[in-house]
Amino acid sequence: AGTYRRQLALSSGRFAVIEGIAPDGGRGFQLVPWSREIEHKLGQHISGVARSGGGIDWSLGRKRDLGL
Image 1 (tube, helix red, strand yellow):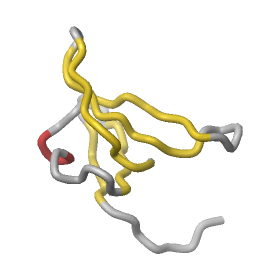
Image 2 (cartoon, helix red, strand yellow; image 1 turned 135 degrees about the vertical axis):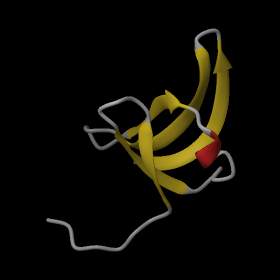
Image 3 (cartoon, one colour; image 1 turned 135 degrees about the horizontal axis):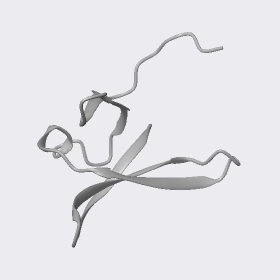
Image 4 (cartoon, one colour; image 1 turned 180 degrees about the vertical axis):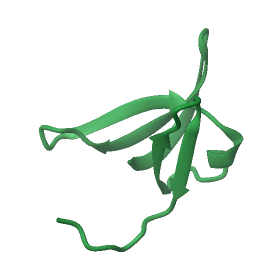
């Protein structure tokens, strides 16, 4: 989960740069396969869960809930 910052076009395909908090508490980023679903969410918080058959189920925007 993190903020969608930009799209990258690499020789292996298009990727979204998701900026978030690294496990050590610092800033980090992840490259994830780009999809049209997140194209208009630049600068917004998104999270995703990998599907067993491939692809990602995206949750767009922040949701309030109780965390433990």
